Image (cartoon, rainbow, N blue to C red; front, side, top):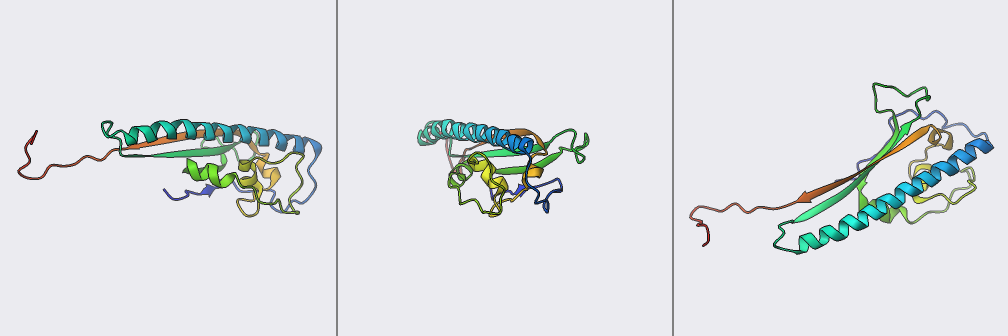
Length: 173
């Protein structure tokens, strides 16, 4: 699977807004950062648990499991009061689907925050960093505050290869 994209489905409203964030907005960003840190911890724990078990199954030839893929999909859904929210749509601001290992490994290294980003009162977790940093998604903070829910899907693809006997093959021979 290629990096399936950091898809932003909802138009960003605040790309040019440079006014300082209010205290309630900063508090809400700190809360969002804490929620994203929980998501990050969940994805990391699930990856570790699943990976360790599946590596053992692949190593056991009697098991028949050939390979596996672990993927995660993380979606930020809009708040119902957002003007772009709709009952007829998934109403998401952003969605990311990718293999879990690169998601965990690449996001652990935080680059320096550019000076033009508004300061946050806490160190952003790596998922928040990816959302706000100009080198990644660069979603304005006020647009991030439009999110009301975070949905996480963990996908496990188990793969098994079967040999097809050719002509003249006999069972047990």
